[in-house]
Image (spheres, rainbow, N blue to C red):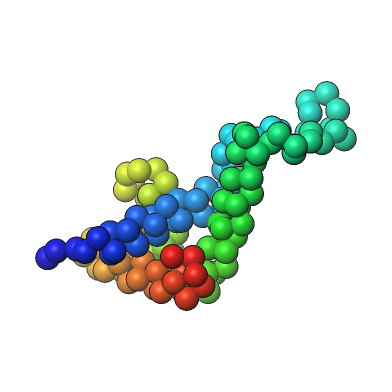
Length: 131
């Protein structure tokens, strides 16, 4: 079966958004920008004047995007919400090592549910203009 270029682009975009969302929801923060507080004085906030060169604006955009994806994930029902969460976790690691006891043990059935969850997520993101 041939997969067209538009489908590949959509799948790659979905993968990228799921990775950003997983890292955001797990508390992981990219090492971009200056720290929010100085080590010696907690009340000091560094100026954002030059912070854009270090990626602070990119971090803010990623956080905003991840928040939007999080709202869409919360709209999904189980087992699809769980499947998309596990899929995002595996994509973030770059290898499929995570699974969930809430998903079927049978690999074919589990794969089918993950595929359906990705289709649902793609439709939700397209509706919201994220893809």
